[in-house]
Image (cartoon, rainbow, N blue to C red; front, side, top):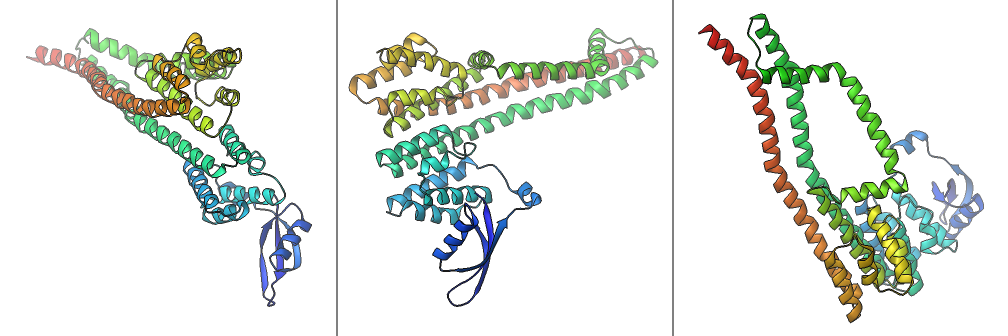
Length: 402
């Protein structure tokens, strides 16, 4: 929504200057008149490119969580939507997000609903957010829906933080290994080998093997780097195709250590999403349509869910359809079947979400515990090979001197 710079006089004759968001100059003047200001001059306000460059265009999950929580609380207290948005707008620290909330408030003043206003910002509000807000408005339980949404985004952010923490240790180990190999094999060993060769000492087989590997990488590193970049780019392009995404995500579920984590995260998302949307009053058809659209984070499981949904539309139960499709754990199917029988399917999915949350954290801890001794073994083997390639010729040289 455009902004306008204005000069206006209030009731006591004091000059006021500032900016206001409006659809047109006439709309800006009307809004100023409603505030008790007599307009002297208005003109379009344009931010400088330098200012726009330094303003972040990303809304963090934590900001969304706080916004949804505060909006839910203010609506529960009985404040009108416009007043609730105005109060929240004052607290939001990020200029970019604050501007979006201001524009949403202006759109609601013009007659749009909250859902219709939020749809204009797909890079900030995800399809699930929009669907839950729309249902909350239609069913009259918007405060409760916003609270559920805030809790769900908070859960997603917690899982993301857990994965980032889990990735720090392996990344550090890989960097350490690369650094050690680069320094010792790329510089120290060749220098020592030249010195020993000049002294007439025959190099052992282990040393020659390590040197040959070092020379190979030194002579062909540019070709190897180019081949790696081209292969990575082609693989990236393949994963962007529908078939490639499905095959890649199916392969990810079979990786040792990491596969179970990816699988449990997807099932946890499925459970939390289903419970949140079902509690908000969405129909099974709408729930499955949303879950099949890149909500689980795994295109293979999303495709399996779409196939199961086709069976559900033909009259199959959710548990039978998912069991026949395959790709889903037995525990999930059994809990869903029990929920369908007892009429507590939302509670079943909520309990499943809690269980798989714990499984994700347990799997991450298991992975870290497994990587620690594995990394020690790998580092020890590399250091041992390098030390052996250095110490053997030195030992031969000392033996000859003796």
